[in-house]
Length: 390
Image (cartoon, rainbow, N blue to C red; front, side):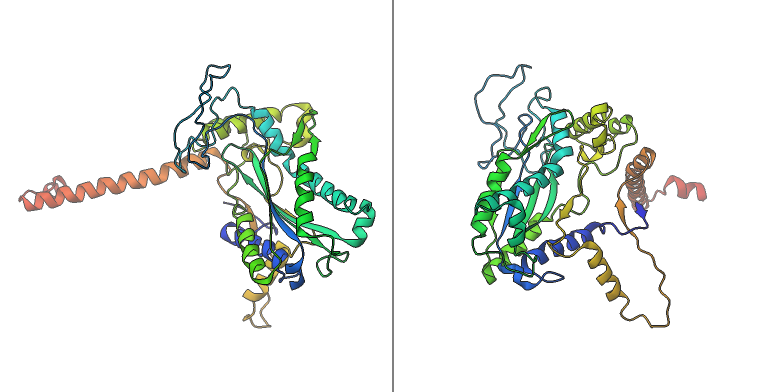
């Protein structure tokens, strides 16, 4: 494990728990925002990447690609009649790896965070324009706050889960104008997502995919609380560090030697590494983020006024842990936080893979030896070791 003396996001289940508190306090209030935010208009949105090529999947009816279509230009089948299980390693892999646009998938991941921020900016403009207000005037009467979580799909590109909330001009402590409803927020968010695009450094257009889901979070007390808790749990289910290929790669050969990596994701990581060598894409630092398939953003981000912070939650936890410490005991000033998981060198990874296998094989041999000794004792014959000792 790699640790740093800093205050980044906490690790493992604690990170997920704190992220849940961040999302929940922004929907129901508490730990910073007042309880009034529970009555503010809010929506839960899932925005996905466009298609970069047909992949094995599970549709609503349980089938993959049940269609009679001719092979692709590479003479590979474009149909699949298999009903894949949820743990099938084939899921997410392309039907034809030559048809799948790996470079475009990497650029999508690299630009996804910027595309989201551009979408939120357009949402604010559209909300103001719906009432004939300029962007500057809209800030005087209302604010829009959001929490965004990135989740990698099996096919490689990320998709975005977000909670978007409308507040009054003074933030969470003030009510938005009556015309700014959850229905209007959902309507304009759909329109903003459909019309927003940005250009990658190589002038490639990056935009959202066709699959977009925007659900209203009820503001009624009982329904709003239940839906808010559910959406907060769903939005933060992947912020425990389980993103990408675990460790950063130092060389291209490290990617090729990653034994536990599915071939499809390894191919995307290789594309990220190779694209990172191009001068026009140097600012994206794709080689440095090949282990996250080109995605360089944080797993979870939020606007300043949405809710509390990881630092505030960590400080409150530290104060609670020190509640019984006598006043005359000096507490050193330090903080340890999660930097990453995995091993910093490929040899360490190989040793970690070898050791459990070695222990299991040694345990198996010892068990077989014990059984052989027991059989020998029953038949009146000692084991070779006991005979030698006699």
